[in-house]
Image (cartoon, rainbow, N blue to C red; front, side, top):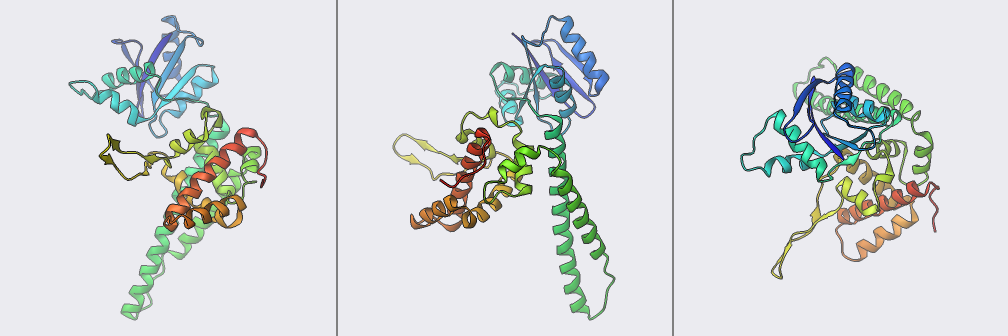
Length: 313
């Protein structure tokens, strides 16, 4: 089996072809094809090669999608994992050359997940990120309008309103993005929206950030991926730390699912009963909502993997 590590950057990427051989290629279509020809010349084939690349914002998308479309196996590695491999060395050398070798070691250790995103998923991911940015800017602008009104009251003067038009523009663009989001992965979006509490935005965010649900063998692994699992700190019989959520996953996805759980505990009979049970056990209100959030992830996993709409049993 051949293992290759890729340290990706904006304009180029370093490819560790073995333990010592590292080559640099341009991060564009000609550069990727040059890399492809290089590994083929070394005897690499689709069935005996695994390529690993660190998740670097958006810069790894072109490489991953090009290689996936050609039938090559590409693994995406969380930077937290690859950095642990880098830090495990005695000298802790930090260069693109050494990072590529470290990522190759991470592939050898079977870290990361197989890249399976389709063009539809990538398009949906782009729209979800853009919508999130616009919603945040609209909220900040509303705060500026609030501050503007307070200053008017304090001065007794009518000042120039420079933000109302901006709010309208943001709201219009958000609506247009939401319309566009409904055009991708429509069957899966409808399936997830059958769960009370999961709306169009939540469904789109789930599909965009999770992609292929089959890469999770259990709902607990999906919970951990999102960052809703509990951190355990125990040692022997004397140290038993209090459990907290790890919050190691996608922050935006946790935010979306918290809102979905907040609605679901009122509209979904299963989640409502579960919420009331947690409150009766003495859980704090928000702790109970977080428990509902984890329960909701289990429902999402069941509906998504079975491919059948939600039923209240």
